Length: 132
View (cartoon, rainbow, N blue to C red):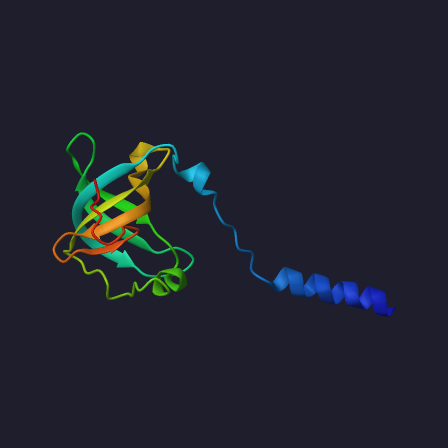
């Protein structure tokens, strides 16, 4: 076996053993031309990579209570912005704005801003700015 053949085999073996990382397109999942706002009770905060999520019980456009999955940045990115796994707790009332899922039945949002009115904690909102 020549060195070139051996090198190609080693590279192929290493490449096949490396797990693939697929990443979805935000534009395919979320309608970036629209912004929605929900206000409700936080039921879960998943501080993780590649994306963190908050789950919020809030009414939909028909007034029916729904569990919304709100996609956020990764844990590393958020930590660099001062957000920790302790920043949000179940029961917190939060106001979230962002891009809704293209399929409204999914009750998903790509977060643009988050505000906790009880103490003014916010992300994506400038100090003193309100979430309208």
